[in-house]
Each structure stands twice: as structure tokens, then as C-alpha cells.
Image (tube, rainbow, N blue to C red; front, side, top):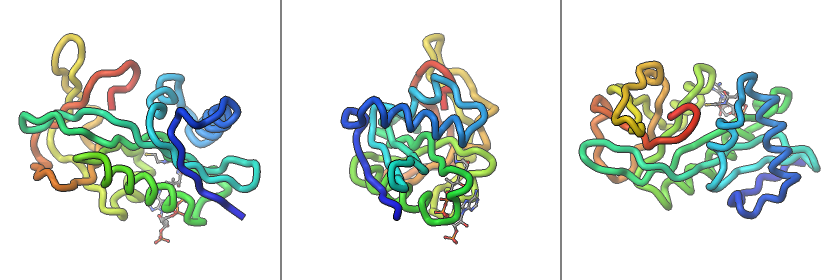
Length: 176
Ligand SMILES: CC(C)(COP(=O)(O)OP(=O)(O)OC[C@H]1O[C@@H](n2cnc3c(N)ncnc32)[C@H](O)[C@@H]1OP(=O)(O)O)[C@@H](O)C(=O)NCCC(=O)NCCS
């Protein structure tokens, strides 16, 4: 019997955070400490089968710059379901919960999709950002060409031109 719970990072105990990291290491072969850190500080969706964590995703706040605006953005991170447990609706249940947070708290949703994940998000209404992407680094705005084909957004009330430039705020590790 699976159970999905949502909780802010502040309400996850140390053992749960260890379980989240172990799950993400299992799902992604290139998970770094910085990738894990990027998933903290917001709302997590966690799927448990008994005592075993089998799914995780989170949404954290970032500022994305577009058209002269600094959009309060719910940025989805670290979405993964243990391989043997996929196809049971866990990923959808987690995204339902995270998208509810995005719609209720932010002006825009955004995420960087893996090649394998892009179709999953597209089927949920996330749209590929088609314009150039950049990051607002300490040295100024720097293009992030390698991310140009993987940033997806969930447009909300703010009108967007998906072919315009999109700039993310700065952080250590991968900017997107
Ligand atoms: C993407 C992922 C989270 C989906 O989790 P899941 O629990 O298998 O998803 P669900 O069972 O809720 O599937 C929901 C729907 O999405 C579809 N789907 C699942 N994974 C998909 C994928 N990679 N591409 C396209 N469609 C996908 C399912 O067929 C299903 O469609 P249906 O509703 O028409 O039956 C899971 O495959 C995963 O962990 N992948 C590896 C990590 C990853 O790529 N994460 C995304 C990082 S950006």
C-alpha cells in the first residue's frame, strides 16, 4: 500500500533526508551533492511503500528573469521513482502535488528535464522553452546553451513569449 506525503524540508527528519539522497543516487547515476542541495528548501512530495521511500520530487523557489520581470518561480527538482516501481502512477501523484504548490504560490513553474523525462512533463502540459537560456552569474549574464533544449515551463497567469530569453538566478553547481 503506497502513501504520498508532502512536507517542507524543515519538517523532514535526518533519516528521511538520508533516504531521499539514497533514492536519488539510485535513480540518477550522476547525482552530485550540489544537485541534492538544489532539491532542498521547499516542498517535497514523497511516496512511501511502507518504510521504503520509492518516489521523490520537490519544488523550491527561484527567480527567473524574463522580459524585464523577476518571476517568482516554483522550480521542480529531483523527480524520480525507483525503477522497479515505475508505471504505478507515483510520478503523476507527486507532480499533481508539486504543481498544486506551483499554481498556488508562484507566477511560473519551471524545471530542467532529462531526455527521458521530457515526454512525461510534456504530457502534463509543461512546455519546452524555445528561446535562449542564460544564468545571472556573479560575473554577469552567461549563456547556458547546453540547457536550451531541456528547460520546461508551466505557464500560469503571467503572459510569456516562449521564444524570448530566460535567465535563472545564481547557485553553485548546475545553474538550471
Ligand atoms: C519520469 C518518472 C518520474 C515517471 O514516474 P512513474 O511513477 O513511472 O510515472 P507514472 O506511473 O505516474 O506515469 C504517468 C504517465 O506518464 C507516462 N510516463 C512515465 N514515464 C514517462 C517517460 N519517461 N516518458 C513519457 N511518458 C512517461 C506513463 O506512461 C503514464 O502515462 P499514462 O498516464 O498515459 O498511463 C520515472 O520514469 C523516473 O523516475 N524516471 C527516471 C528519472 C527521471 O528521468 N526523472 C525526471 C527528471 S527531469
